[in-house]
Length: 223
Ligand SMILES: Cc1cc2nc3c(=O)[nH]c(=O)nc-3n(C[C@H](O)[C@H](O)[C@H](O)COP(=O)(O)O)c2cc1C
Image 1 (cartoon, rainbow, N blue to C red):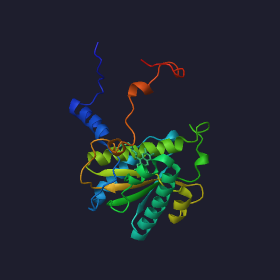
Image 2: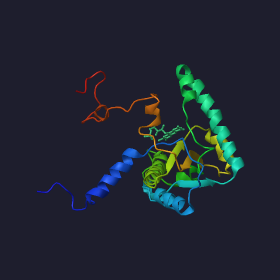
Image 3: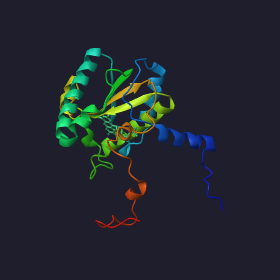
């Protein structure tokens, strides 16, 4: 009996999928080169092919063309970066040394937002309304992977107050910005997550995160 699926892609294509998953990085260092319009379109199409709860497609993308607006978004993020550092207390200085965005340098800046009137979409969200955000995140992961395969970096920035960003972009009541996306050419991709390189946090061991039948009892060894 064969264990391989008849629907499996050829080996080199399977390898490419795992390669892009392994080599995707959250990027904060960018070159100023522009992103070709056809490439941007492909990345947005990749996002738009993401799965979504009840096929609601809650994602909306706003391309930031105005330089003044880009500076305003950067200022909002800087404000939140400082507030986050203060909230981190003992790790304040260490956090302030991290590079957490590339808003002013990247070739393209986008804001991803959840659409308004989401309450009409009950399918799969009656008990888990946050599935709209999960769906938008799937779209962004598609874009992140496609960008890496195209040789472009993407950085997801969530250090901002959505209530302050929404009016800057004229979002309607009920819509919510959830990601500032820095997209563009990069000098090089980090070998590992930058937060791991900078010793902010290590990657956890998968074995410690996968359980069988039940959540392990507190203090139980998982050997
Ligand atoms: C929902 C979400 C929000 C994030 N927000 C930020 C952010 O505001 N600033 C930042 O530097 N990185 C942000 N990141 C990137 C993470 O720091 C990064 O994914 C993590 O360190 C692992 O690195 P890797 O993506 O290169 O594997 C965010 C990632 C996700 C998924």
